[in-house]
Amino acid sequence: MKEELQYKLGVAARATAAIGGGYAVAALSTAVLALALPLAKADAVLTATMLSFTVYTCAVIWVFAAKTAWRAWTGLVAPAAVLGLLLIALRSGACRKDSASRWPGCIRGPACWCVGYCS
Figure (cartoon, rainbow, N blue to C red):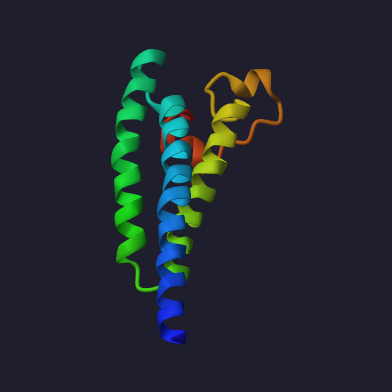
């Protein structure tokens, strides 16, 4: 009985991770890509939105392929944290080429380099 309950809770944890965590990673990746892609705004948003379906699918596959529910959650929280930091950097203007002149305290770090904004 105990093993059956543990199995059911593990499946529930994975399903929650797949639905909620997958959505969070897909939404964050959409926002980051929409801001980072060097396209017109409408094209960048459309491309990012189409790619989000792939991101969500990969997240769901990852959750059910991981050995444990803990590892599944970790595999979603880590990319979500990185994407969240990238989104904050992109939204704050710290990664714009002309931001150094407008923002004296501009920090140009890896987040800027990986999206190609800093020279």
